[in-house]
Each structure stands twice: as C-alpha cells, then as structure tokens.
Image (cartoon, rainbow, N blue to C red; front, side):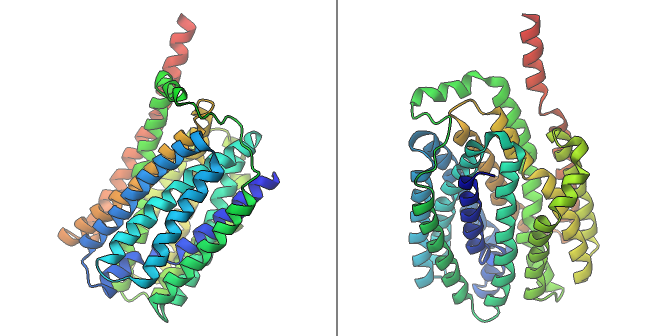
Length: 393
C-alpha cells in the first residue's frame, strides 16, 4: 500500500474517531437532554445529513477542479469553526444550526478522501477503498466506545473531544496531503459534459446508488430509533455504545476471514452487494425480536458482516464507472447517496415509531432491503445494453 494512502487512512481514522464521539449519541442528546421528540430529532438529523449531501456534491466537484488537498482543507476549516461554536453554544436552537454546518463541512471532506484513495492506488481496486473503510470503522469503534464513557460524565466533554480530534486531523491534512498528487485531475469545466455523454455508466451508477440509499435508510436506524429504543428497554448507554465497538472491532479483526470467504467472487461486486443485503434482512429480523443486550449484539454482528460486503463495493463500482477526471464527482454522488439515506432514514423511522410501533418500523425496513436487492440485481443492465448496441453497430 503506497505511503500516500497510509496518510489518507490515518487521517480518515482520526476524522471519524472525533465524529464518532458525537453522532451515535445525537438522537439521545436531542431526546433526553434537550427534551425533543423522536420526530423532531429525526428532522434535526435530516438537516445535518441534508447539509452533508450538499457538501458531498460540492466536495466532489472541488476535487475535480482544485484538487484534493485544498478541497479537504476547506471542509476541515468549515467544520472546525462550527465545532468551536458548538463547544460554546450547544442548547436549543444553536445546536441545530451548528450541527448543520458540521454536516456541510464534513461532507466536503469525504468524497475527496475516497477519490484520492482511488487515484493514488488505482491498481489496488477494491483494496484502496476497503482500507479507507476499515480506517473509518476503527474510528467508529474507538470513538463510539470512548463517547459513551465520556458522555456518562458530561456531554460537554463530548463536544471538546470532537474538537480536539478535528484539530489533529487538520494538521495531518495540512502537512501530510500537500504533496499527494493524483492522476486524472482536470480543472476544465468542459469535462462535465463527459458525464452527460456517457449515459449508460451514469444510469448504472444511479441504479446502484438507489439500492445503496435504501440500505443506508435501514442501517441508520441503529443510530437513531434503535438507539432510543434500547434506552427504553433499560439497555444502558455504555452497552449501546459497546454495540458500535463490536461493529468497528469486527470490521478490523474479521478482514482476513472475510477475504478468504469472498475469494471466489471478490471480483463480482454485484453478487457481494446482493449477499450483503440479504444479511441485512436477517440482522433486522433478529433485532425485531430482541429484548436483551445479547440479542442486539447478535443482530449487530450479523449487520456488520453485511456492511463489510456492501460499503466498500459501492465506491469501487463508482470509481470503475467514472470518466477520467471525474472521479471526485462520482464519489460525491456515492457519498451524497449514503448521506441522503442518513438524512431520510431517521425522519421516516421516527415518524413510524411515533405513529405506529417499532415492529412496524422493522417490517418496513425489511421491505426496503427487498426492493434494494431487486434494484442491485438490475443495476448493470444499462451497461450490458450499451455493449450490445455497440456490438450490433
């Protein structure tokens, strides 16, 4: 693995560790500390994710026009300013405004990090994106575990810890990413027309991103409605945070086992995503009958296996579909899709639980995964059709 990719991996780990102090606890903080309903909490998280969607698209475009170094620093600077404010004002409604700005700033960073990873190690294929994905989950494991412990003393310390980690990330990016060069960079606005011309690849990307969106709408419930539900059935905050520690630790430690298991179809990304989606369905079926920590832990373990198959595969597909010089734009679409799922999911989940019940939510999510499975099975039809037309002509 190239040295430049190691720098990106370390930066991503520090970035996500800081963010993971806060994001798993957002719904709990809004619901219990600020006294807001699950529906209101869902709207707040939707605003944060909506700003991230915009940030993802802006970040991807900035990568193609001004390069990864400057676009990443821009996103970090915006996030740092908001986190400083959050340490001073974290009541209602200041928390909402600052959390939205954090979403926009951090949204700029992610597509540039992924696009740079694919560019500095193009021969690595899925391995480059999997390395960044693993780094993210090390951050999730460390941050979520530490966050639950820190929050048990005071939520004020959570905001401070998040700020400190982002300052470290700024210095890593400022000194470490300055000399990273990427291939395929083109600042010309005319290059945007290439995306429109290659309709078959764009259609395929939108198909797989639709399936990706539905998966994220389900997955994010673990950070929102399921998080609050665990509190209602007397599972402690530390135990809930430990679920994310299991998630992150398993992603790191189970990589060798998973690599051997998927060796036969490691180049068939569509099959990987479909198997992962089926595993998601099993996980939520288990969670729907869980009433003790042990059952939620089992559901989380199953969920983690599914995400290990799906999450690295989608940006890998985007990178393979992207026209030269538009890697950032395509990664921006992928990241904005994931963020869109995180935006819509908590709101829909909160409404379903408030109006109906958790069981109705679980059944709805399993239906979403079934639709995602069908869409994934058909995502490459535009590519096959384009090849067929080319052969006939």
